Each structure stands twice: as structure tokens, then as C-alpha cells.
Length: 578
Image 1 (cartoon, rainbow, N blue to C red):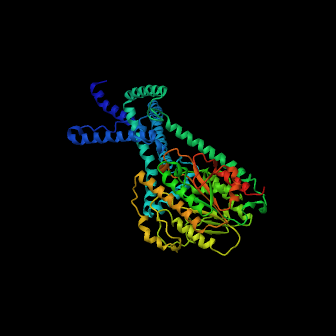
Image 2: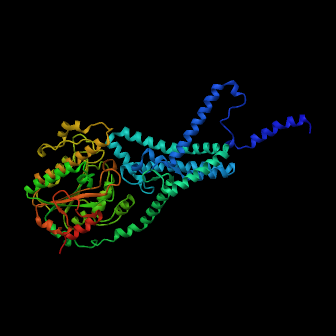
Image 3: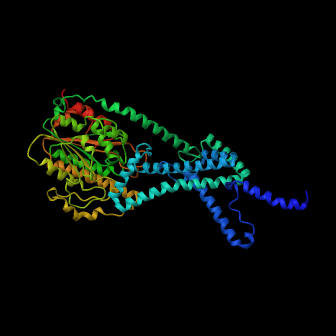
């Protein structure tokens, strides 16, 4: 072969080599021939831009793998980890041929993007509800979240939050996928160096795992949290699917299902019974040093005031199925005698003919009433509870200003309920379920307690509307103080109502629906809520003497604790025939 022939063929071979090299494996960041001399400034900028893009891609992938999914562990030290999943992915990319490598990188990018979204959802739910996101059941709560932001901060904030969430959900998987593809090309270009780096990191990972090395408490440097998260949610999905099949049987197992009305609640004949849920009134309100001194003093003073008016009270604790939100789950649990800790169980319950506590009163010839000031639209759940009369935000006819999430102050709710029900001429006894929402998050300021005779249609609260507006960005300390004041307001309202309008035939039960969000309680708070019974009839309290509840409006640390689903059956048993 002549020298001329070889010179002619070499460029063709070089062209074939470039043509046969997959685009993903070429050095896409390399400057074309001649560019270095022609535009050194442009070459430098392209190099800086390329390296910055690579750095950002690596950081995004590491964030997706190492970011905590528990809000209580969110700190800079929690990111100092070596994720085993990253090392395994790098080893796989190094071993695969070009076509398989590109496909694997793309699939891994999509999976990591979805993992990042799941972590964001878990972070949000752990911060607000103290638990992880439920992949089967919690999608419906996104609509509830939109409504909460709308009612608390306005429609613009709600729409902006929804748009931001949609953008993150659409963009994050794409960005992570592009990042993994970019890093896979870098790995191939530096095959030998990457192989050595992976081998060294594997040795470090094994050593850290063997000695339990941690930079932050509970966060090992030798990390497998991504796998743990995926396994945990997979197990949760299996549990939900299994529970769907079995819970219906539990609903039908009711010891009071066939009890005649004349054998129900015989010890309460002639009494008007109220069950009032106080929003976010949890155990921390009476035990946490940040709230307990003021709220405890209020309850102690209230005990003395009611005692002077002839009332006695006893208190204990119930364990709520929820925390931070989901009030309807607590209501359903207490009234049905079933543990309703998710919307799947809630829907199954609503589709059943389970007798609720209100249904027992109705069967025993009480009139039943529901008062729900936060209900502002159609509420089909009301048909399950079977109220004879139901009052929502519209029928309560409040004409004053809104106070954040609450459509009306609790004092107006109680005053309006009295006007519509309690002040009517004597008739059959009434059992009422009340929902009081002035202590609902986000705990913005509440109005002062006013003279009951001055409330009217609520227009008087316009004189105190300045208390309803406040800066939306508040420190954690300010949020806690506002939470405490809102609970004090509702408890003061209840005590004042009983003191002003109570009579010998009133039996008033009030309890918390759940603890407030972790921003108030901190992480890992209990699910316990206080519950209290107030009456002038000592025979009523004698019926529950075996419960071990403590005297007064405030349960002490040693007060008994039951699960909330135990209350219905214990109540029906205590006040039934003996």
C-alpha cells in the first residue's frame, strides 16, 4: 500500500470512528478544531458553563438520593452521606454497553426524579401532619390543602401554590433525568478514574457501616435511605390494599347493632347532651411548658367558677387517630367506635349502616343536631350521621368578618346554636355535636370574648377585625404563642357558655380532635387529646366512676389514656341499664 493511499484512508477511518461512536459517549464539551485559536474567551466560557452544569447535575442527583424525608431531620449535616444506591448505579453504568447504558441512565433518572417528589411530599406531610405521605390515600388531601390555603390566605395564594406544585411535579423528574444522562457521559469519558473513585468510596462506605459512623444523630454516613423509603412505601401500599378487604368486616362487628332504643342511654334520660370538638386541643396544651402555665391556670380557674355555679367535671385523655389535621377522622372515630385513621376507612364507614353515638341517641328518642361552622359547601357525610337538624356556615348566618380559617368565632357559633336550638320552648331532649374551629391552624389572632347579649348576627366582630389580620410570615415562637391564645379563647368561650346558659339538665362533653402540627408540638409528639365531662348532676359522674378520670377541667399527667375508638362503647355501657 502506497503512502498516498494511507494518507487518503486515514481521514475516512477517523470519520467512521466518529460515526460509530454513540453521541452519548462523545466529548460533547470539546471545542471544535480551530475554535481555540479563533475565540479563546468563548472557549473559556463554554468550559466554565459545562463544568457548572455538570456540578449542578451532580448536586441535584445527590440531593434526590440523600435529602431527608422526615422534616424533623432536615439539617445541613443530614446531607453528609454516601448513598449506596449511587455507588451501585455508577458501577452499573460503567459495566454496560452504550445502548443499554443510555436506557439505564434514563430509567434511573426518572426513578430518582419520582423519588425526589416523594421525599418532598413526605417532608410536607411530616411538617404538617407528623407522618409520611400515603401513596394510596392522600391524593384527595391535596384538594383539602387547596381549600385550607384558599380560606386561610386567599384564592391567589391557593392558585399560586397549586401552580408551583404542578411545575415541580412536571419539571423535577425531567431535570433529574437530564442530569443522570449528563453524568453517565462523564463517567464513560473518565472510565478509569471513575472506577477507582467508586472502588474507594465502596471501601469507605463499608468502613462507615461497620463502625456506625454518623455526622447527624440517626443519620448514618453509610446511607441506604432511598431503598428504605421505597420499601416503606411499598409495604404501606400492600397494607392499604389488604385493609380495604378486611375493614368492611370490622365495621359490621358492632355489639350495640341490635340494641333496642329503650335499652340505650337510660341514665341520661331528659338530659341535653353536647359533644364539642375543640380544634387542635392536644395534650401539649396542658403539659408543654410553653402552653401549660397559661392554659392550665385558665382551666383551674374555670373549674372553680363552674364549681361555684354548681357544676362538677372530670377529665382524662383519648388517643386520636390523627395529628396536625384530618379532624373528620377523629370525629368519625369517636362517634363510630372504630379506628378511622385514613380516608379509605372513612369512605368505607360512610358507606355502611354503622350506628354512631349520635345514632344511638336518636334511636333512644333524642333529637340530634350537628353544628359545623367550617362546612361551606355540600357535605354528603351528614346523611351518614343522621342529624335531625344540621347547621353549617350558611345556616348559622354569620354577618361578621372572617378570622383566618374560621368562618366565624366560636363564641358566635355557640350563641347562634343557642338561639336556634337551646332557647326554643321545651321539647324532646337534644344531643348536639359541635365543631369549634377558632383554634384551627394557621392560628392567626382571635377576637376578645364579648358580652353574650351583644353578639347578635356577628356584625359586632367588625369592631375587632383588626385582630384578624396579621403578617403571614411569623416565627415559630410567634406561631406557638398564637396557638396558645386561640386555645385559651375557645376554652374561655366554653366555660363562659356553660356558666351563663347551663342548667341542671345539661351534660357537656368537650375534647380535642387532635394535637396541632409539629411546628407547635415539635417532632414525635403523642396523639393524646384531653376530654372532659361537665354536669350539675352528680349521678352522671357516678356512672363513670370506674373510668378513673380526674376531677376538674384539666387532666393531670397520670390521668388514664384510652384510644379514641373505645369511647363510644364505654359511654354506651356506662349510661345504659344495669
